[in-house]
Amino acid sequence: MTPTSAEPHLESAQRWDRTWADAWPAIILASSVAVAIASLVEANPVVRAPLVLWFSLVCPGLAWVRLLHLGEPLVEAVAAIALSVALSGLTAGAFLYAGHWSPSWIMVALIAITVVGVAVDSPRLRGRLGTPSG
Image (cartoon, rainbow, N blue to C red; front, top):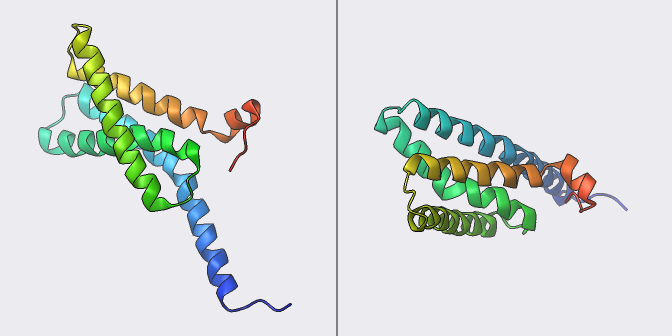
């Protein structure tokens, strides 16, 4: 059986998908560190606001949605944004109802939720849990 001209393109696309999927944990962790530093040093709002917006709208949800292995990038993106908004709202609500409103601590909690999500999705941990590596 001879390979068709579409197979090399398909292999290239699959390799790109794997590379992009492998890059997301690093992007999420780098975003977490950037937001933590920007918040800690009280960076200029022109710098801090886009970082916090990006992080709050994408990173917490993406860290956990990746565990579902949905396979469709657009579906994962929409689910990640929806989950991020939900996690941000629930976290802020929990702090508010506990009587400990603090935007800084809310961000720390979201960073922790995100880092735990990335850690759970790590290949080393997946191997220990016996879950498929995907």
